[in-house]
Image: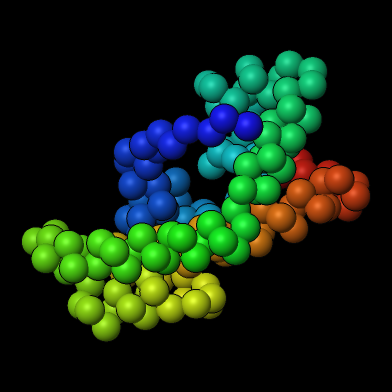
Length: 155
């Protein structure tokens, strides 16, 4: 696949403040968002996803794209992200808008695992949040393919 990186999070959706744009309960559970309802409300009411998901075969195509993308998010990918975080650490700490101390940066951006991804620090622990979401998306994909997704993915 020929993937391109496009600036996506223009409104800070993955930040502590952006997570709550939908609602506080929705924001704190963002890594658990259902793949088959990737909106704050009903898919059919969403101006973009409603018409897209209404076309026969598009949901299956979307799930296949998510599976393909998940194949790129291996452990090496996250090691590279942490290496890049280390490379920009000094610049982040010098940024006047930064709220991290060096200790916070190491704890939330450089440490292994993702147990502390759900924090209301700003900025949020980017790599840890992505790792937690990867696990949840993987579990949902497994359930979708096995036909064991609760309520068949209708939420």
